[in-house]
Amino acid sequence: MTLSITGVIAQSFCAGAFCGPKAKEQVILETVACNLCGSRRYKTVYEMPDARLFPDEYFTVVECDECGLGFVNPRPDRQEIQKYYPRDYYENEESASFARYLQKRFTQQARYLKEVEDRPGPRKLLDVGCFNGEFPRFMAARGWDVSGVEISEVSQRIKDFPVFSQEFSEISICEPTYDAITAWAVLEHVHDPLAYFQKASQLLKKGGLFVFQMPNFISITSRCLFWEDVPRHLYFYTRENVAQYLEKAGLVLQREDNRGNVYKSSPASWLPYMIRTRLQRKAFTYKDKPLSSREFRKLHHLQRGITAGLKYLAYSPASAVDRMLWPAVEAVQILRKTYGSSTYVARKRALAIAECWHPAAKVRTMSPSQGNGI
Ligand SMILES: [Zn+2]
Figure 1 (cartoon, protein in one colour):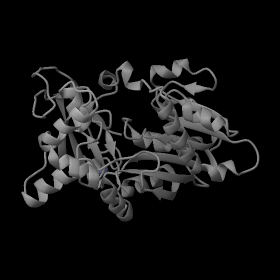
Figure 2: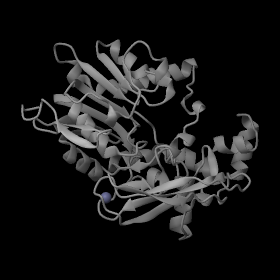
Figure 3: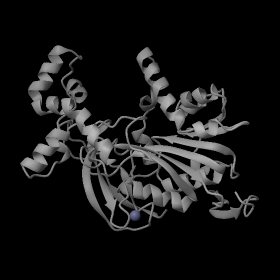
Figure 4: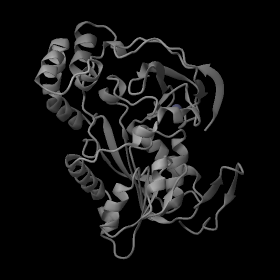
């Protein structure tokens, strides 16, 4: 990947409905070329703030003119991005309902690995972005030998299985080691996704599976409705982008699911978007997006309940109708393969990358497995 730090200072102004007082904070951003094709020609798709943590800081999402990959540009570099992942970002719910939700989600995720699970003999899984280790533990209970990758400090608390606490692309193993590698909602967060695809290919055994879930950049949810978690989400992918990444990495696409069975991506604000763009023939910018009911309650210090619901209805009647239409809109999205998130299953080719990338040395060396048919 080519990149250059150009000394761009993040614009710090208030244009959204959820902004606080104006504040000037200088964040050094880097301008990057397209991670997939290397082009430096791109156009702006939208601008939005870090609505979750720093609503005064605006970022630009661009689309590569050559390959259509979406990415935040300019963006916080690997050092600066740490500011956008405060410790409580990783905090987890401990309620019984959340535990039930996780069990249901993990069951869905495990289905993508059934082919490997049904093979005789031991099987090794590496879960990239394993957070506090719950998915690897779920798979360990099904007989898998599990490991994880997690760069946040939370990984330091995991004692019951091995965890690499560095970037996946920089871990020291170079040999085909795993029967499956998973990356749930990870590849939108990383600075160099191509290196992640290549590392997955390098570490998979012949016929092994790389299973990953990510935003679908052709969806209205990802492209138009301002629900991406910018700047923590740095990349947005079309299925053509995924095919090109897999080709570069020596992986072959086996399956794409675009139906939200792992992570939901509800088309919230779909109706206000349609009213403004189709009926009023105007652009739909971040300031035109109504607050979600959760944002509304937070802004007005309201507890969940009938009073908050009625106040929200008065604030944005279209949002109430919008909410009722989600199931129909989602059904159409699934039929048209335009749902907001996709899960992909790719298989390691018989012949694939056999080089070992040593980031410290900045050289490529050939691994012992070179040429022996991995
Ligand atoms: Zn490109």
